Length: 414
Image (cartoon, rainbow, N blue to C red):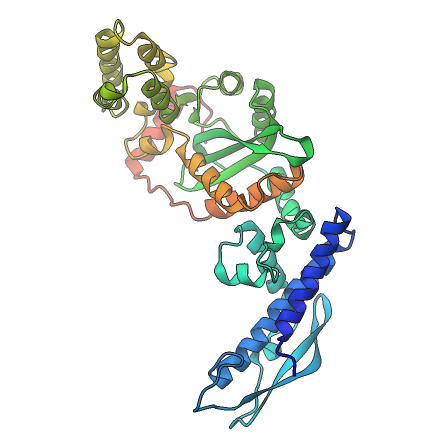
């Protein structure tokens, strides 16, 4: 009797499908349907065999003296699902006190949409969940979802992304908006890297939300203007603050569209630039003085401390001082906000951490096949990460302070 399990046989079918793609150089039109059908079938088969293992109390071909029974091959069966009938090999047993009763077959019914979603989620999560990763591997250990046909498998992610891009933003009362970009390599465009622009915000009710994601080609003023205008056209009201890096194109775009909003210069980028222009043996002490500027109690105190540091080091470290002076007003704008929110908006680190998560999950795909697979994977990952963001719990006094500052800047009321 062959000792190849039904799960392994289905896995071989998956391998054959993918090997055909490798030989042909591209995925067939029906690749998505075939892949999902086999992936769901393989997962169901694996779960059915797990039920038999649980009943017998041992893995296949594992011998035990206190045996509860024996494996007795398979019978062919079918499972009616929303995707049509799926052929399955029903595990059989003998020598047991009770017959093998599959709760999976009884309760699954037409719910294999859940299993289909599992296949999609494994793609989004970079196959980081061990059980899913094992389920969607080839016999040789290769990741199924790193192949060229992967974009076809996750078409529904593209629909989700398009819906996200078109939704109304009128309901969002944005206190602080953070804008940043990440560069991605596109296989379809050779070695060229293109920027994906991203926006997230902290709302008046304390929620943190992902607001927009779009291809920018390059982080130019035109690309940022197009993105910001898209958000405005969908109802986004002027935010109280906007956090940016030092990109001239981005800062120009923000000042054109939201001239009354407080623009905050990212301190992570600024400190990195200053550190690069200081001698290594003195950088720690000097940077401590600059951190004191960032963490000042008020905007006025921050200005005073900045002028003291500028006067102290302008002759010995002119390049570092020039970095500190560059866009200094915007660098201190966060000090006009309630202290609770300052650490959250004085840098674009929130987005940077999201990008790190996206890189971690997409590392199995070193180069995307084009704009569409890039955007749908990035959206899927960032959307799921943003769902876990911690809400900011503003006090009533802090909300009043934000409302008063908004009025002082001449911004329309929320």
